Length: 356
Ligand code: NCD
Image 1 (cartoon, protein in one colour):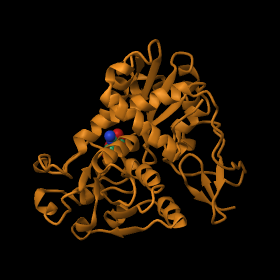
Image 2 (cartoon, helix red, strand yellow):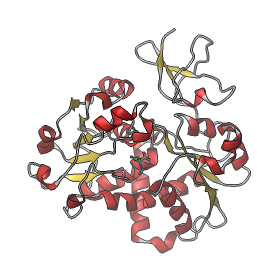
Image 3 (cartoon, helix red, strand yellow):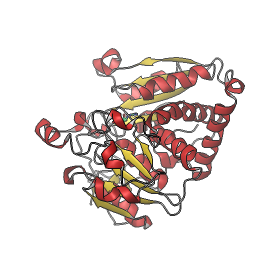
Image 4 (cartoon, protein in one colour):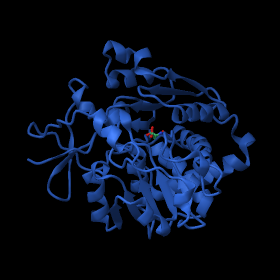
């Protein structure tokens, strides 16, 4: 049984093969319409969603399968205090595959360790969102025809924007990728993301200026300032209009630029940009459905159990105290860490770094 919790759970070859399947689905949709007959997808969404949940559901339906699930924590037994582990255990009795979105970082990983069906992370707090990355990759592929040698500008809330964290992990594996991280000081990329980039020797320039970055970019990935993840609403109010992409700002951009956004947008891309041929964000949402179809097919077909990625340590001195981590709410969940190259340890659920 295979899961998709982190985009790095898929090899580059597997990503290529998912893109190839998605392209085939686009070309021959009728060949796929019975592939998941009598199979059920459960969508467990403990946080708001439009595109991700509905595109998962549409994907399963277009494969001839069925869908069960819920779209808010308040309508599930989580409202009665049921743990993620127990919920995942239960859903394995009712469905063949599970997609989970949860506000706590690491919740889908906990689900995957307690389910007997494949688990897909549909977004865990400000941590990861690997299936959005699948949509992003197909969009880049359809625009550029390849993944190598691209300069990718990531703009907006790079601290809490989980889609950005997964996209960086995926694109880091293609030769010649360069990142330009454009954000206010308060919303810079998390330290663990920068650390991984520097360990792999991948260039990532941090700047606060979208104007300065614009001329060099092949892809501009705009993001929403993630209001729901701020501890202080006053800080959100101060930062919410940091970047607003309008046609005037695109005059210095390449003709071949591709503008992506995972959506929903608030005001960070003017609707006046929508008619620009470089705007790809609505095609990106459609691409998400095709890649989720390809992913469901792949995970349902695989029987092998994935081994944990790397050494895992449980030590009473290593305690994760990140309030955003699933360890903060899941009773009796073991605090598990992985050693880093620096000699420290990272929580497997939320990446919080600790020392012994
Ligand atoms: C993103 C998410 O949920 O992280 N939306 C999505 O899945 N397309 C981006 C966001 O909410 O800003």
